[in-house]
Image (cartoon, rainbow, N blue to C red):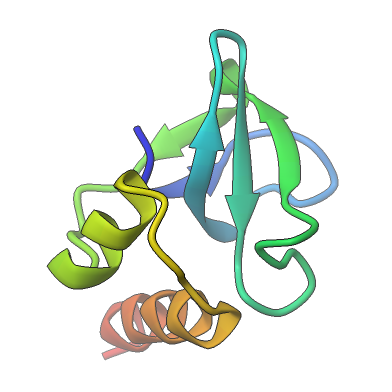
Length: 88
């Protein structure tokens, strides 16, 4: 699931958009590039997120999946691009 964009379904951050930067059996770790950075991602139960069909930049997705160097600005831009498309 790493590299997928998701919408949060429950919690105080309901309806916020994040990108999965890490996952394990029960949890995903989410970043938005602003408050939740790559160094301090949000830990969220898999049942509290909804995957979004919107594809993020392939280069960014590949970097996340292969543990390549990614900066918060890239995450922030991907989320901003998605939100801009939704407001059109």
